[in-house]
Amino acid sequence: MHTDTDRCVRAVQSKDARFDGWVFTAVTTTRIYCRPSCPVVPPKPQNMTFYPSAAACQQAGFRACKRCRPDTSPGSPEWNARADAVARAMRLIRDGVVDREGVPGLAARLGYSTRQVERQLRAELGAGPLALARAQRAQTARLLIETTPLPMADIAFAAGFSSVRTFNDTVREVFGLAPSELRERRKKGRGGPQTPGVIALRLPFRAPLNPDNLFGHLAATAVPGVEEWRDGAYRRTLHLPYGHGIVALSPRPDHIDCRLSLTDLRDLTHAISRCRWLLDLDADPVAVDGRLSADPLLAPLVDRAPGRRVPRTTDADEFAVRAVLGQQVSTAAARTHAARLVAAHGTPIEDPEGGLTHLFPSPAALAGLDPETLALPRSRRATLTTLVAALADGTIKLGVDTDWDAARAQLLALPGFGPWTTEVIAMRALGDPDAFLPSDLGVKKSAQSLGLPHTPAALTARAAAWRPWRAYAVQYLWATDAHPINHLPKQES
Image (cartoon, rainbow, N blue to C red):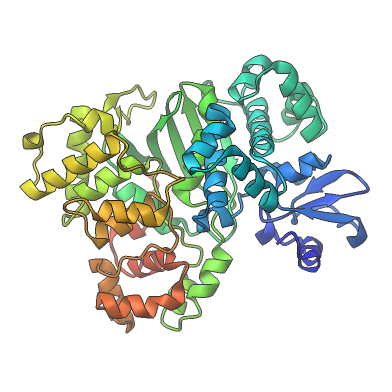
């Protein structure tokens, strides 16, 4: 989009928040870059230059605006709607892979040389992987400066910087203020008292966002000990690269309230990325709803409750295991099976609030389980143990960098895996926005009630017009039912 100057100028002049994260406005006279919705008086068009990423702005010598804080924009929805190498690289960088494994690690995960990855990212984003990771480190540092009382040296290393000097120089360059000035500025602003050990932040999204099916689904399918709905928040435990964490997520009119407790602050970037992925916060609801509402039979559903998101997962392997446990059983039965697995094989953790007790067991922890201990049909036991073995030995790898079509082929080759299980994993674990469940009972019932074709083949043919957003169409179809997954839980502990 950044190459369409006229469109970008119109977005800035109208302060259109829909384009935040899609494009960044650099003002050549002030050397400041902003989001399109910046509240200040728009600069003259001849003084605007547009970039596809904050990292590209920073590389060009621009610093972040102190009013609109463009570094906190929602991420570009493009990276979650594509499965090519650049999109997969951006998802991995957002998860902190460059900080943990370097550019060679990023390239190895993608199956390309470091030179190819560098070239592709520069061509599309105007910055290489190191610059993109550096911009993300700066944002992580800002969050820690503003939301914790940690010493600056601890923040520097927690944010992924190699030295305090590099941390100081980067913060000054990106934000135009020294770290200590950022903290002082926050104290004079809207910052309130902080709970010790808890990082409180606001996760932005593109409006509209309908929280009903999003939080309703997560709460209704919550595995006891791992997840819960408490005091208006969805809480769960997190597997993280350096330790574990607990997150509480609450819907608000213009943001998601996020409260993180981490055993290692180096996991902050990854934890934020996982939370945004879980709630599908980088989606473009205008594009999605515009395509779906073009179908006259779907339009009333979209108009009645726009902005539905796809409830995802924080751990793709975990969801794959739970998808098998949920085959051909009710939501309550699936929760029961998962809770038994957690109690027997999960890693115990301490929760200050007392509701969460375990991390969901990893494939390695489940690799040696005795199938006879599972209260499942024999065929389902074989399906589960085969999946766990493939995940544990790396035969199948599921994650944000996974090639969607390749993963489908691998999963379908496993015993007991059919289109429903494969597609629900593609939808909720891998994030494919076009995953579709034409054989799902709820989808078929809804389609029939709306006058849509309800046989899998006929519905798939009709749904071709909904592409590439069929996963969102499933959310609207499911929402016609009175099932608890479609309703925000009551505000009670």
